Amino acid sequence: MYYKREFKTAFTTSIPVMMGYGVLGFAFGLLITSLEYPWYLALIMSIFIYAGALQFLAVGFFGAKLGLFDIFITTIFVNIRQSFYGLSVLKKFKKSGKLKPYLIFGLTDETYALLTTIKEDNRLNKKWYYFYLTALNQSYWISGTVLGALFGSIVKFNTNGLEFSLTALFVVLTIEQYKENKNFTPFLIGIITSIIAIVTVPINNMLIVAILCSLLGMFLLRKRLENVN
Amino acid sequence: MSTNELYMAIIVMTFANFLTRVFPFLFFVKHEPPAWVVFIEKNFPPIIMTILIFYTLTSVDFTTAPYGMKEIIAIALTAFLHIRFNNYLVSIFIGTIFYMGLVQFIV
Image (cartoon, rainbow over all chains, first blue to last red):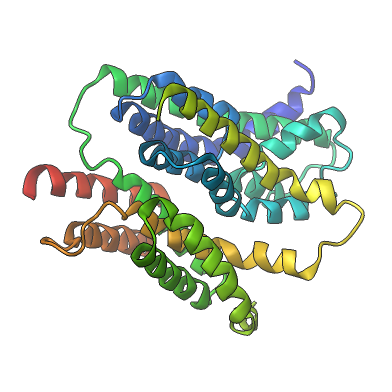
């Protein structure tokens, strides 16, 4: 194998993600097969979409028969934080040549966290180190997903209530967001616009309406949002 | 959704998700991003996460008994676990298993 040392370092660095992605991927795979979708649907999604929260949410889209335009807009806004990650690794990825498209594709929350917080060894060939780190992380996500999906299609048990894992995931992510920026205004905007949307439009349009109202709310409350930043 | 619709949805999500990741590399390699772009990218994530909690609860009927109490209790437990132990796997798993217990054995 080329760049063996880069692989070894990447592997050691990625072990915490192995745990996280393995378990969460397993839950996702299980959810997919519990709703009678084929196991390989989970595999296809983890190869091509490769975004945790979005994949869980996708299960809801499938069930609600959400339109493609709504799926597109929702995806953009659910993952808009990733553009922020890209902004801060523009320089890091500059000299990565042919590997760059994959590095960008694989820029998940966890990969970004590892890329930006772990101190780098200057003897390493950077682009290969980044590549192995990104690819290892995705391989954990894919393995977890497939194992969960296969487990779900072989072992039959009562999965009633399993869909709560999605709610729990967003509760956890919301708390994490609060820790990063101790400002209650964005949550208030989210709560008010969600209630407005649920009360005024059919459930299938709820996300889009809540997102649009929130954008408006953000600019109206701009000062309150920026005060703490 | 039919199988075709399912795959179309996956293609759209693949494309849109990649777009959020590649966006800065397409536009801001040479220029600094405008202030409003940074403002949205910075402040939208906590808003959308809050909205998504509500979105996952849209099938719950809060107007008739038990008025969404199962969901509210399970959310409170999940949040408590997360604030207390700060481990997202623990919070999600115990929260979900607790909820599954509630709907399968109690109500």
